Image 1 (spheres, one colour):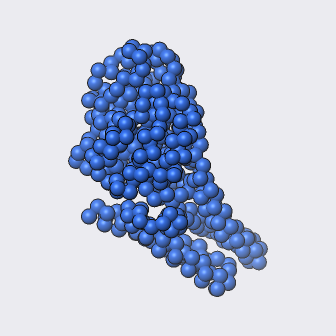
Image 2 (cartoon, one colour):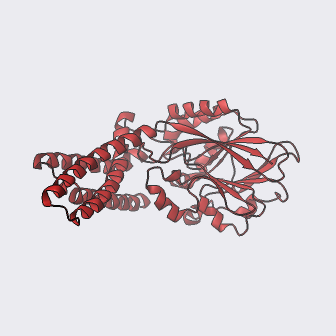
Image 3 (cartoon, helix red, strand yellow):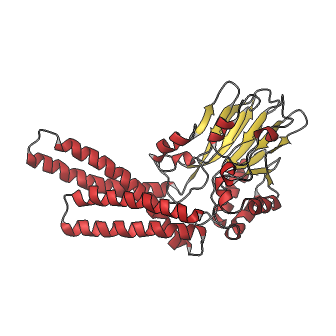
Amino acid sequence: MSFIIFFSAFTIVFAFQTLIIKKRLINKLDFTYKTKKYLSLILYITFLGVLMYPVARYYPLVPNWLYFLLSLPIGVIFLTFIITLLHEIISFGFSKTSFRKNRRDFFKKGLDIGAISVVVATNAKAIDNSRDIELEIVDVKINNLKQPYSIVQLSDIHIGGLIDKDFIKSLVDKVNILNPDVVVITGDLVDTKLQFAKAALDELKNLKSKFGTYFIVGNHEYFHGVQPIIDYVNSLEIKTLENENVYIGPNDNGFYLCGVYDRFGFRYGAYKPDINKALENTNNHPTILLAHQPKFIEEIESTKGIDLILCGHTHGGQIFPFNFLVKLQQPYVRELNTHNEFTQVYVNKGTGFWGPPMRLGASSEITFLKLSS
C-alpha cells in the first residue's frame, strides 16, 4: 500500500512538471513544427522512464546500463522544469518591453535557442558531477577533548542500482587511505531489498580504522526491513548504535560516540529514537551524536552535553535549486553549523546519491573530521 501511495504521488508530481514543460516551453518555442514534435517525443519518452524507474529501483534485476538510462529522467525533467520557469519569466519580461516586434522576435528566438542549450548543458554537467566524490576536511573544536581524533563520516550511500559492489569497493579504498581513528555511517546505507545489497555491503568489512566502524539507520532502512539490515551490518563487524553509546579511546582520554534511530521511527511505530537512552552515562565527557536527520535536533530538549552532531539525509539538495526546498524542511542542509554555545552540527551532503546519477551545486562527499580541543 505504501508503495502505491508513493508511486501515485511520484507520478502526479512528474506528470505536472512534464505538462508544464510541454505547454510553457516546447509549444512556445520559435522553432519549426517538426522540431517541436521531436522535442515533445523526447519529453514523453523521458516521462516514461520516470514511471519505470521506481520498479527498477526496488527490484534491481535490470542490467546497469539500462538502470542508468532509467535513472536519468527524474533529474532531467526536474532541471528542465526549473529552466522552463526561468524561460517563462524572461519571456514575460520581453513581452512587456517597448521594443518593436521584429526586435522582440529576435530576442525571443535567441532566448529559445539559449533555453534548449542550457537544458542540454546543465543536465550533462549534473551527470558528470555525480562521478566524483570530494574529500571535505573539517576542523572541529571539542571542549575538554584531551587528544586529537579523526573521524571519517559517510552518509546516504543508498546501496542499490548504480551504487553497487564496485562503487563500495572504490569507496572503501578511498577511506582506508585516510587512516582514520573512527568511521561512521550516518544512515541511508541500504536502499533496496537486502538480498540485492549484500554483495556491496560485504565490501564494508574491509574498512580500516583504529577504533572501528559505527552505523545508524536512516529513514530508507525502514522501507526495506530495519532489523534484517541491522543484523547483517552487525555481522560485518560494524556496530549499529541503537539508542546507545560507546566510549572511543583510552579511559578518560577519549569521547562518547552516541547514536539514535531515525525520527522516521515515530511514523513507523517502532525503532523510535530515544535521546535520553543514547546519552546515558555521558555526563561531563566530550560527546558526539549520530542522528540521520538534522531536524532531530529540534526534538532534543537541551543539547547541553552534546558537543557535535553528525547528520546526513539532505544530500545538500543534490540538484540545485532543490536545496532551497530542503531548507524549508531541515534546519541545516550542509557543512559545519553552530547550533548554540554548546553544540555544533555537521551535515554530510551524501556519499552516494538518490534517484538520478546527477549532482548540481552539491557534490558527493567523504567527510574527514579532525577533532581537537
